[in-house]
Amino acid sequence: DVKVTQSSRYLVKRTGEKVFLECVQDMDHENMFWYRQDPGLGLRLIYFSYDVKMKEKGDIPEGYSVSREKKERFSLILESASTNQTSMYLCASSFPAGGDEKLFFGSGTQLSVL
Amino acid sequence: RKEVEQDPGPFNVPEGATVAFNCTYSNSASQSFFWYRQDCRKEPKLLMSVYSSGNEDGRFTAQLNRASQYISLLIRDSKLSDSATYLCVVNINFNKFYFGSGTKLNVKP
Image 1 (cartoon, rainbow over the protein chains, first blue to last red):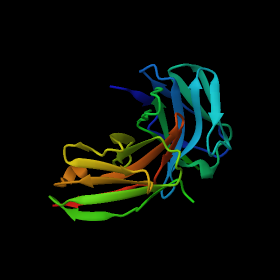
Image 2: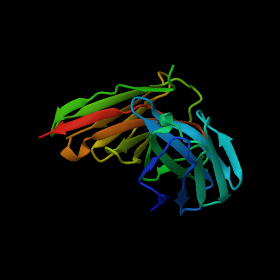
Image 3: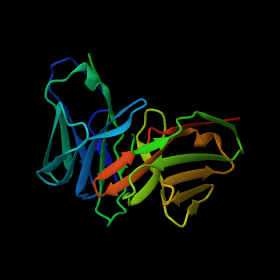
């Protein structure tokens, strides 16, 4: 089974703090993604990466950055946390499948910024 | 306009009922289609892919209508354990997945 592991299930941070969310997958997937999920808005893509050191902005990258130094690890960084970044953060991975790519998710990090 | 639209529900049905969810998508270039299930405060998990010919997995049947840009999920003989939120997901290309906001299902004894 594909395993996508997020380092923290719950996090509480203060406004202005730098926050690191870590994600590791064990299936050698090329593609990794960071989403946030908010009630009524569904999942929105923050950033994705299709290879080591490669990254592309998603739909809502403002206030976030990412790092992918190793294939299995994709980190999301909140440079200066704000209250509107309180959300559920979901990491996902997929492998290229000629148009039949499927996403596999980690268990999520519920981040509260106070 | 949202890329993927779903009725948020909730759908409240008794055990044993048949229930159907619908989903519409706006991008005609969409390549692949999925239903994911998400339990409260958990991550989404793949329920099934959706193919043009329609496909079935036990009590679950998925249909795709490309002409109308419409996807459906039918659940027969509902179980209490089917209570969850069902997400419609559309893939434009390898990295572009669009999610509906989800349809909540409550199966009651």
